[in-house]
Image (tube, one colour):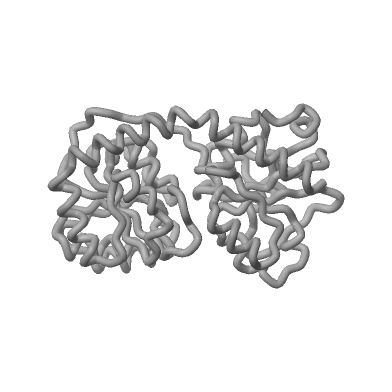
Length: 326
C-alpha cells in the first residue's frame, strides 16, 4: 500500500477527455483500486466519461499529481505541482525527445523496452518491475466455440485492421471485426475490401459495440487476431487479455515478435511476422486446439491469482518514484 503520507497528498489527473483506449481503461482500474477520483481540467458535458468513471472538473488541490492519461502532442504542466506521468505504450514520449522539461519529469511505465529506450534518450524513466497492465476480468471456461476469428479493437489505422482482413482473405477462415467507428470513412474503405468470410459488426454508437455484444462474440470465437506495427509495445494489451479471459487463442501478426514473446513462451497462441507465417500458425492452432486452450487456462489462472501482488508492485513503484523525485 501507499504510505498514508503520500496517499493523502496524491491525486489522479487526465490531460484530455476520452472514453476509449487502454490508458482510459487502466485509469479506471487505478481510480477504483486507490479509491480516488480522476480530475480533468476541461469543461465537459454531464455525460463525459473516462472509460466508465466520471471525472471531476478542475485542478487537484494536492501537491503530487499522477497523470495516467497524457497528451502526447502538447507537454502539459501544472504550476506548483509535482507531477508523475505514465507512459502507456511509448507513444506519449515520441514528440518530446527534444523537450528538456519532459525529460526531467518523472515518468512511470510498466513496459521494460519503453523504459530502457527512453532512458537511453535522457528521460527520467521509472519501471514497474514485472508490471503487466492491471486486469479486471475473470476467466470463462467450457464455452461452446465456433470456427471463426475475431478482431476486436478501435477501428483505426494504428491497430492494423487491414492486416486482419488480408489474413482472412488469404486463409478463408471466417473473421468478425468489431469495435468503435470513430473514423467512418476509414471503416467504409475497409468494408469495400472485405470478402464473403468477413463480417463487420456495427457498433451501438461511435464508442463501439456494447459490453454485452462483446462478451457474446468472445464467448464464441476460437481465435483472436491481433495486429501491431511492432516497436516498444511489449507485454499484453487489453484486447489480448480480454480474448484470453474468454478462451480465445491469440494469433498475433507483428513486425516485431519480441513484443509478444510470452505468447510463444507459454504456448498459449502463436506470433507471426507475416501473412504466410500466420496462415501456417492458424493451421497449427486448429490442429492442436485443446493443447493451446489448456495452456491458456493454466496461464490465466496464475495470472489472475497474482493481480493483488501486481497491484502491490504498482503502488510500491509509485511510492518509490515519488520519494526519489520530490
